[in-house]
Length: 314
Image 1 (tube, rainbow, N blue to C red):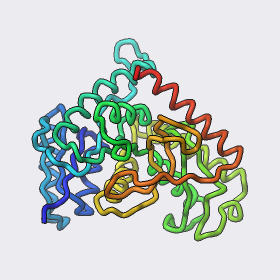
Image 2: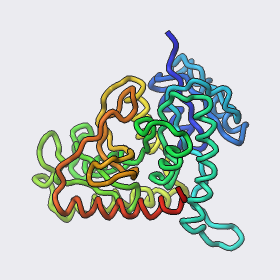
Image 3: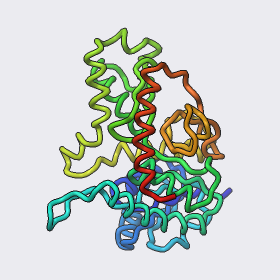
Image 4: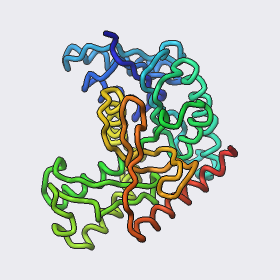
């Protein structure tokens, strides 16, 4: 029986760490693709050489060409440029400039992916996440259920981590979910958060909970402030959780950026909501019963996503 195959486009920190987690779990053969051929080949070879020590038997290769990616089951797209200062002017690019630059990069990647792996499920990690999902959907012409974005898995992991730290409990017993766009407008749902079934508001005061929610919203920025660049262990872990759900047809409920068709009152917009992930990709969107405050936050998040998507010109 042939092994599963996963292509990861972008051999930077997030892409290479995705490959690392996939290898550690022995989920699939891996192809790393990067415009810098040495980066893809070198990291693939380095990871492959850890197999005898870590006891995984996989094919892990790197390339700048897409021929090696043919017939991938899942493709993870991490390619794109980060938001960083111009070394000459000291200015950050505008949001619109960043969106247009990454639209070109992700668009070209997607056309190659669709050509070589027309039956794959694509998981988008490139930022701005919600807008790049629209690019992949538009350029791949795949059915909507085979295009999704990774944000909620990461935001939820951060949220659960901070709650477990505050309460001194195992992260395994913390259950919660974060909806909405990736970034400052994400929507944590404390009303639906519990520890081993105990509502979180019975376990900590409201001011502590709100501080955790704020820290979750700023979670990416906190790491950038410490490292000088974006985190990658947790983003990659959240991505591989989605990859595993698809490859193993697990029917996992994972908050993911998916194209809504009337759910939550939105149509034609990729936004983070709980979705059942399995072999078909996004197999079902779960509609939660939100109260007025939660719906207002999700509306605010949706507006922020819509304004970024409007830059794409689709």
